[in-house]
Image (tube, rainbow over all chains, first blue to last red; front, side, top):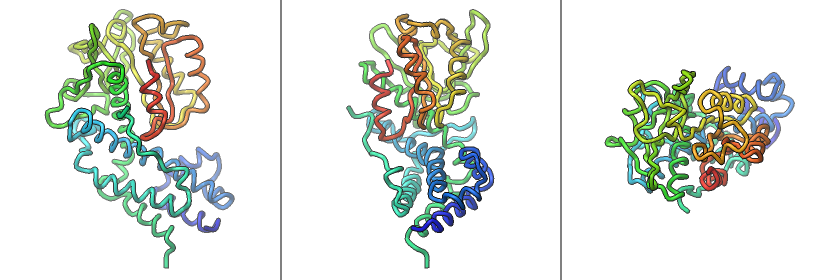
Length: 128
Length: 219
């Protein structure tokens, strides 16, 4: 992949995720986003993916882990995250969707040749 | 024609904004980290020979990931061993009732059984065994200052040297981070060297060694 390719992908992410996302990346790098993409596109793409990994991918991975833990250790099949009094996110019914979303993230980092940074072990912490 | 990496990027990005992956949900999914922390805390007790049982889960386990609301409407764990009978709960308010201190909402608490009063508050002086603040973030110094401030308000003497030798503080309060905590690791070393009943655990991620390390070494 060329530097130009990395830059193009950075812009795709920025367009999809919007100004708040760009501002957060700018705070982290202490530089104007577009200028940084021009100067060091691969580095910025890694920072973007790292941010997505921490904010979205990891919590979703955790949700799948929680489901497996509750089922395997306590035989509880369903769980919800009560995000407010009225809004409960039912994870049990969404496992398939979440797994597909996570799969597409890992497929993407593999295609970008960045697997080493984002792949994780499937080891279960509740099994001694 | 798109290259395979472009297709992979497009496949991923297309899902953002759809179904449960819309911005309003993705911006709140970090709260899953609190639920994850509650589970690894329950596991830490189970690993030490406590009998851990889920409670209040007739319609599935309901994690209370927000501060308001009656804690008794949500699921929690109990942990029992000998004369010790605890509850492990999410998002519970605690207050030092002896000093009429600030009422603080804590992410995960370990409390004496049946100690939430009619106002939904736990007396930190008598019934708060330990608590954990959970941040789905990389560590930075202000998080440590916040933790210490909360401990100062709720259980001041926990901040003293050798507080871990006090039976009431044998389980450290902790800051649990999903990201790395390079800039604050030295504080955890300081707590350990002074035998202070506080800890910082970083990089708590599924499949990571840090989770096993937390379960084995927290207390």
